[in-house]
Length: 278
Image (cartoon, rainbow, N blue to C red):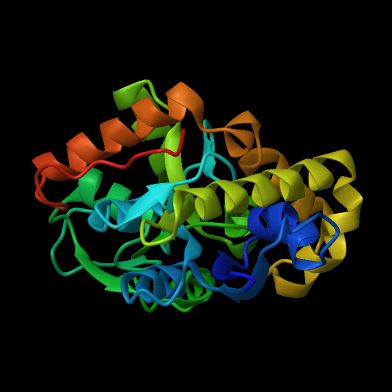
């Protein structure tokens, strides 16, 4: 009987780039079957918590919450320098510091929300909305600040918004580590051989995309919020790197740093740490 892997990935361009060949069966599925769903990152986090995916892209903050249930795959992660979410403002001169102010975050267990809490704890109220709604709400003046991710990182200036801080740059300065945004995790209920096979297929899919980047553009356009090909490829160039191919020792150190800081602030339970498949 062929194993069917319930796989969830995000609609962001780096995921549709990485998984294009897998979704289109342009690489060998190595005896597995894949049932793939594409969702917003917080939807993925929520469904993963419920056990509705065998393998899924998850915010590393969400993965930390259930670290005892999942293992991180070496391939498919978004980790790097200069990749962090941006804290934007409706008023270019505004600074968080008033409990009456409102900050929009793209989901309770997103790494973007974790970073805001690490650096701006108790500065403002927090409201969680789908990432694509953040800049429109700011433009309408219905919130004071927003933590912006995905393609919006490249288009916020065109929207007339102000930059309060690059949260990724602050992470880098304080930790000397690249920022671990999200990665592919597998449920520990899967057999070791199945997890290893899934990892091999994802690695093959990424290598296929790296060898022919333009082939992934139709899939990227289909799901992206931003349809300009130049912006889409900038997104890929920023978020797909050597650590996407293999997290390695640097990824291990970065995840440990995130875990320790989250524990100190009480954002995850004591002893939580993520294991990367070796």
